[in-house]
Structure formats: structure tokens, C-alpha cells
Image (cartoon, rainbow over all chains, first blue to last red; front, top):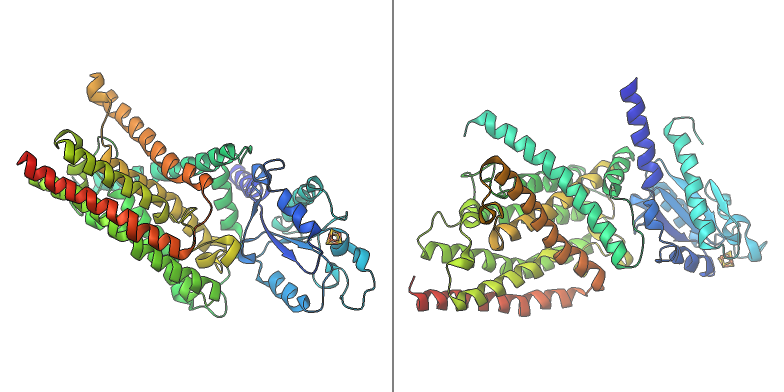
Length: 153
Length: 331
Ligand code: SF4
């Protein structure tokens, strides 16, 4: 029992403190993307929480999606979601990704990200501040914990 | 050395090496962050990373050659670990002493890079193929100066009548600095510089991380790897960092502090091992951490030119000076 508990704690701390993030722009204006990058700078320094930006969805635990989904991106978003190994969470960063924002009802988009793939955490703002994005990633841990315990999302 | 004894030593070296490797990796990341004015991740970050990777799904892409794709990480890890067993730890001679020498260690060090290239080619991703090509180009450029540095030292030892001159234990037990003349000193310094220049490329660290280059080829060789396989590559990198730093220490700064301080017996041994770890750390700090935060990534042709021209010339000059030194000293 004790051993199992210890293992459980190790598992959780692994996920809590070592989230690797893949950043995907599905058609944003680049405003949110700049804020995501700002979170990496010495001022905000997400690495102190073990959060790391990775170059491949295969390495990622978290998909940070910015921008409403444009038609050409539709297939790609779905494929990148499928490419990310389980357990994973999706975070919609910014007004566009959460609700289509200023592009609401546009003819050339397919709507917010949750029209295409399931989203776990929404970070509102246009663009959201880096603190808000970091907060969103930390919230995603809660979801991962539930996934790990096998209770589903 | 009895078989059982060797087994115990091997286990000790592997467990200790793993722990030290993780510690140094954590220190490397922490210090790099401090150098950039950040707070940086906690020291146990590499352990957490590996724990997390072990919990992730292990994806084998449909376009991959499955057995090769799965075998490459194991190959890299096993080669790195085996190389660790050939390293002299401070005053202790290597666990596999007598079963292989410096040349074998150099080959073992090349295997993780080759395995990564193979895995990349087998993964069927164009990014990984580009990464594999870059890795091979880089290897072809840095292996020559690396080999010259190693061979230069072994040759000079043999001219002094010390043998077997290619055995790492012999090299570590007979520092060359004391037995060569002024020309030899300059030559050795040049070889030392060449070896330090090769270190970051051997480990694919910035500015020589062109095979992985996250921002341009999306992780390159590793692009399709996830879960356990990625964790194995991570571990191979952790161990390889120790091995190459240990090689630099054994070749160029194998001094202990117990003898000059006049401490003998088991206390001296422990002191020397601790001192060896400090030397490892200094080498890693200088050749990996500081260089990593000071430079931006070079282009493929710049890396190849850097190793094929200046570094090779420096190491050849070092070798030449060692030869001249032998002629002058008449040793
Ligand atoms: S939410 Fe605002 S800043 Fe972000 S992509 Fe949309 S328009 Fe740009």
C-alpha cells in the first residue's frame, strides 16, 4: 500500500512539474503567440515550473492552441491532436481560440478550437497576459491528474 | 578481478553514475537559467522529466520501420552506459579495466549519435531525415580532431616507455604535463582546447545542436520519439555527458589532491573521488553550460567548417608540437 502511494505521488509530481508544451497557431493574429513566447523570457520564466516548449507534438503533454481554426488548418489541427501521445490536455489561449473572438461568424473560419478538438482549459484575453497563460497550463495539471487516476476527463 | 566483484563494481558505477548524471544535468539547467537571469527549474527536474516520459504513451508511427525505430534508443542507452564502465573514476581504475581501451571508448561514444541517426532515418519523418543527415555531417567533422587528441596523448606516452599507452587507466595514472618539455606543454594545451571544442558537438548542445534544432526542424532526429523511447535517449544523453567529461578529465587533468595533501588510505581515495566529481562538474560547466548560453545555433556549413578547419588545424598543430617535443627532449 505504502509503495503504491509513493509511486502515485511520484507519478503526479512528474506530471505536475514536468509539463512539455507544444505551441500551435491555428490562425491567430500572432498576438497570443508573442505572449506565449513572453512566458519563456527571464521575466516570467516558465522553466522554473518545469514547463518546457518543445518542437514536436510527439514530445508534448499540453497543446497550446491560439487563434480560431481556419479552413486549411482543420486537417492539421486534428492530425496534431492525434499525434500527441496520451495523456494530454489542450489549452485554448486567447479570445479567438476560445470563442472565435473578433472573427466571430467569419466566412473563412470553422469557429473556435473546440469545434474541432476537445479543449480542456480556456484562457480568455486578447491577448491574455503571460501570467494568465501560465495559470492555464498549471490548471491543466488538474485534468492530467484525473486522467492518470483513470477517471477520465 | 573476480566476476562477482566486477558485477558489484559495475552496479555501483552505474547507479552512482546515473545519480551524478541527473544531478549534473539539473545543475546544468539551473546554472544556465541563472546565467540568463532566470530562476530556473529545480535540481530534480531531469528526474521528473524522465518519470513523466515513462508514463507517456509510446507511439510508433505508421511510416516507421518498427524494429529499427524501437532498437535505436536501446542501442544509444546501452552504448553510453557501457562507455561509463570504461572510465577511470579518480584513483580507481575502470571497472572493465583490461577489456578495452581508449579507442573502444571513442567508438562507444560515437554509437549513441549513430543510433540516433538510425532511429531518425527509421522514423519516416522528413524532419528526422534532415536531422540524421546533419548528425552524420557533424560527426564526420568532429571525429578527426577528437581522434587526433586521443592518439597524440597515447603516442607521447608510448615514446616515454609507459604502456599499455592506449589504456585509459595508464593515461590517467601518468599525467603527461609533467614529463614533456615547453613545446609539449603548448602542444598539449592545443589538444586540450580541441577536445573542449569537440565536447558540445559530441553532446549536440547549442551552438552545435543542428541535428535537433527545435525551432527549425522541430526536434530533428527525435521528432517522432515519445514516451519510453524518448526517455532512453534522454538517459543516454545524461550518461554520455558524464562519459565525455570523464574522458576529458582522464586525458588532460587526471590529478588527485590526496597525494599532495598527504592523505593516504581510504580517506584519500574518497577525497580523490570527490575531487574527480568536482573536475567533471567544471568540465561540464565550461564546455556545455557556459557555451550553451553564450552562443546561438550555428548553421550546418558553419559547424562543419569550424571543425574541419580551425579545430582540426589546432589539433594537428598540437600533435606536431608533441612530435617536435619528443625530438628536442630525445625521450
Ligand atoms: S485572441 Fe486576440 S491576440 Fe489572440 S489571436 Fe485572437 S485576435 Fe490575436
